[in-house]
Length: 242
Image (cartoon, rainbow, N blue to C red; front, side, top):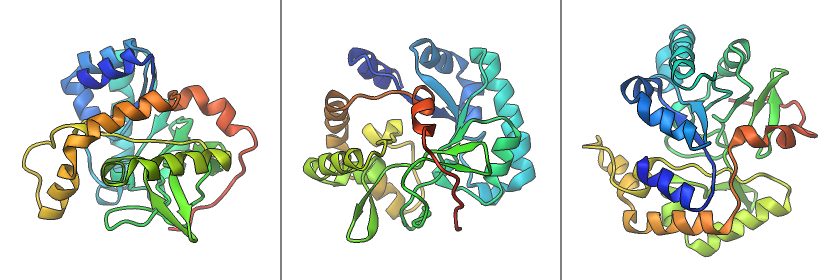
């Protein structure tokens, strides 16, 4: 995280950090340093569990706990939430709205073996009235959504393809939402179970740091919270089919 903060500071760039409550409890000084550098702190759950595995009531209890943790560290209540592994559920949005969140970023409009809601809108929209959804960016080609904006997709695609996807989204008036874990750029965390999982983390790991630096050199980034007003302008209410 220190390395990411150093890179961002060197480019005078701000971002949104989705952080687990458990990590914030263990490393409050890290969370505070991120906030003091001017970045947005948003919630990523307490543990990195799929929402369908913990259920609605446990999620509510853990989210209440997380809000207190983050407010105690930064003096602010997080505005945004992203579910671990984009594991959005039909009940998620109502709970977030009830708990006072301004936006969610748990929808990835693409189909992968691990996650995704391929028929979800690619543009920001309102769910359940006041809750604002900001989907992760995809590239629409031949009638299908293709992921490009982070993780294994960012590491394996040619730079020219990533640049084309960025430009295409901009031409359509869509925001470009990228995502990165620290281990997307450097070493993966410990001994992960399963060959496929390890392969996805390790793929072209040597190129990821250079690509990340190239990205922040070529596009202007802002935290999601800073762009909410503009993103909400003209947004409509949509339903998601799970």
